Image (cartoon, rainbow, N blue to C red; front, side, top):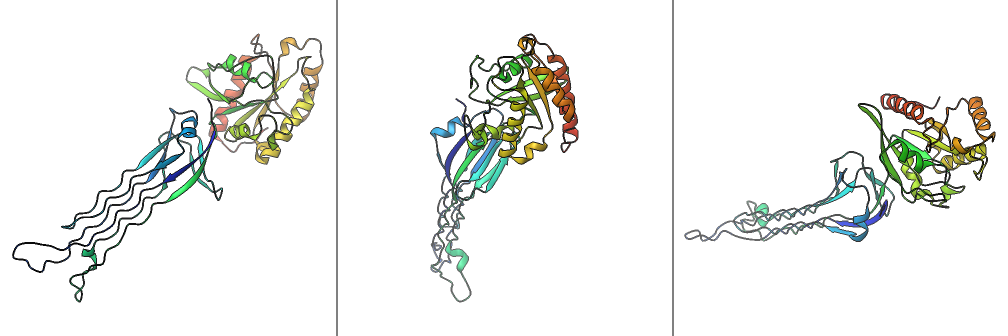
Length: 341
């Protein structure tokens, strides 16, 4: 099961208490204070792992608590520090404070770590409070509480290219044709219920990652259909492919489909309107004598958009598509701020 949003509670360990103690040795009737400090509480640490692809495990375990520090002892013995607790998350997880909405961490690299809840400080023993006027202090400190937070975790897929389009536009068929990904494919809307990732090799030593986003519908930015829970997965993509069904059985005219998609993306995040993109006309093998493809190509030429006609079923145009996207991704990696031209 693919889970990309969960809420959890984390609590760092409490610091151990300092102690009040005095030296007691033979022939030393008035030994000085020797109370040790308490150990610090353990932290809660989040770490990113490429081995994980979902937040499913955190749906069933929602509370994580680090170990408390141990109290100090006599002879100036410091208490043992509490053990940290580490929570492993998929690469691409964004961590929010659930109460304030503040972004606390964005784990985008394998092995990246962050302390999300600090352990409490151990208290000082009475040996710290001896002075020239108070040689037998009985004062000591108790440990402080560790931080406790309620977190909201959102997973945003890390991909070079995002496939966007209405249901049945051919996204799953395309990603299956150009990569080793095997998403569910069927001739009915909303076949894809989870995002899929595929690695596409376009040269012997070159590749890029494609994300197949579940189909959009009008009003998706407001949560309609599969809603904005999947729109977040294109926020990190450097390049977008707008898939438009030009077959004679497509429910919408190509231009209406394209303009509606652009409006939905802009309404969700206005910066997506500036993201480099290309238009992909799908199912050209069953377009028949319809002028839908010609209409879309004319529109793209007028606005200087790149339009690539393909058929994933017959593999028509796939080589040109992969080569074009591969080159664009390479250029965007070198100049990440490049805009669509």
